[in-house]
Image 1: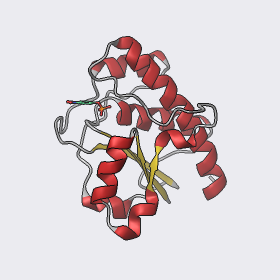
Image 2: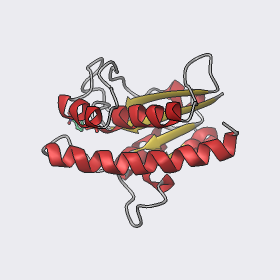
Image 3: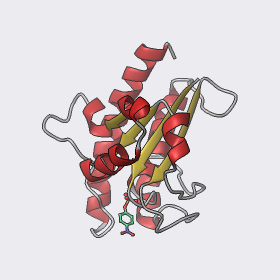
Length: 163
Ligand code: 4NP
């Protein structure tokens, strides 16, 4: 089984969107996720500001416009155990990646990546911008970046793990 964790700061905007979009794209190809499947997908935040909260309403509405329902997700904080449990921990931006690198044991450092590094059609874009203090257009822009990176990562994971 391959285990994938999307990580942002609050786990209420970008990483739950990435979790939902990636799951949606994978499911469309017949790749299902869950404890009894070949793939397990989750998300977490490096900060614990919004523990157990559902995704921000603006993130929910943006995802729903594209048919992706993230309303049932609940925020949680990234834990030390996650570095051992997951195979890929994908950071939405370099601040979160730096925080993860500081906390991750040496033997799991190779699992940490910037999510946008998997996008094949976003030249020069390395981060999913934080939309939290922005408006709905910022959520649209983040969604677009997440959608592209998710496509690229799905291609990569299918090749790498024969899914
Ligand atoms: P996220 O966005 O990291 O994409 O979930 C944020 C959510 C909450 C806060 C910052 C960013 N906050 O400061 O509460």
